[in-house]
Length: 84
Image (cartoon, helix red, strand yellow):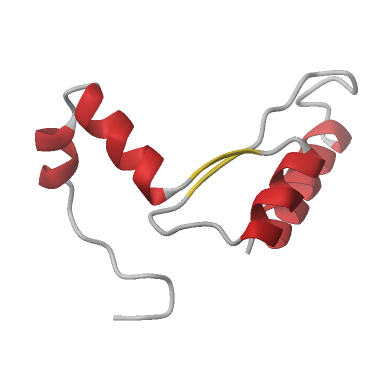
């Protein structure tokens, strides 16, 4: 899943550059959040490509420490793509 995310992000960056919407040297930051945990290989890959990532435990910790729990719990539940 991380490789697909990085590939799609790089493609999007390339398209934006080709359309002249961003300059060739424009810094781009990729960040990936998930509610599950990362396998060791996924963590290594993310670090190797410079991807900022956050797993479920870290995400939950930030939500609570920033006082966002009520807002997050009020968000509508959305089924994953292709599932209803």
